Image (cartoon, rainbow, N blue to C red):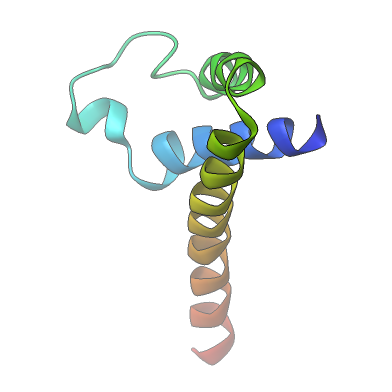
Length: 79
């Protein structure tokens, strides 16, 4: 269950905060433009999906989100 929560939050932040895909794809309405709404709906989808889909989504979006954070931190440390 905690894997679903962490994956849905990281996926929502990856789409909304890092890449602003809701603006690029002109999906500027809820749940796509709202971080908590998107995380909730992604959580429901991941809860109903098979374990393999959850594992793949976890690897993709948690690593993508943490990669962006670590890159920013490393840039601030070295500059």
